[in-house]
Length: 161
Image (cartoon, rainbow, N blue to C red; front, side, top):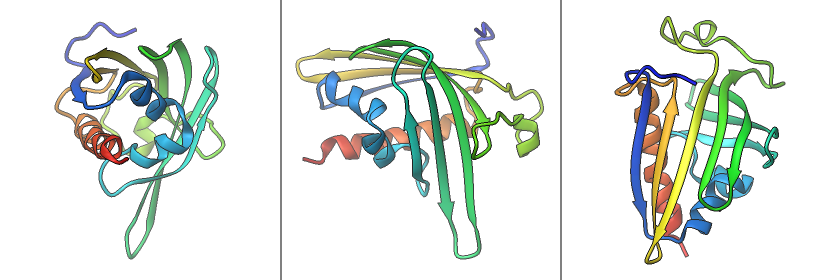
């Protein structure tokens, strides 16, 4: 998709959980809602049609005393290899799933309308090494920070019994 090495985030993280459990965190809507998004955000909507060509639609929400901010994202599953690899596209959208240009949402000039998320899971001795690449999101951006916060939340959920 994108070859510009400056325009992607790559995060590698290990979890003390088997790959099939980490996989379910990405693919089961109820589990996905428990961890996705930066700190302070909840996920009131997670629609996951887990098949190649299937649509995903997610709403991240942050409430403050004065307002509620919602950000919607949609995408299409491109590759599904349970429990080791998941690839999907991602675009900002409205509540109905209509794609919205990032610049219309106040994002930096040049933000792509379509990005791609690649998740690779490798299990060894009951632990899982997750490599996440988000093509179209610059390293060092708020997007990268949001992913890191989300993965802290994911680690905490995986540690629950």
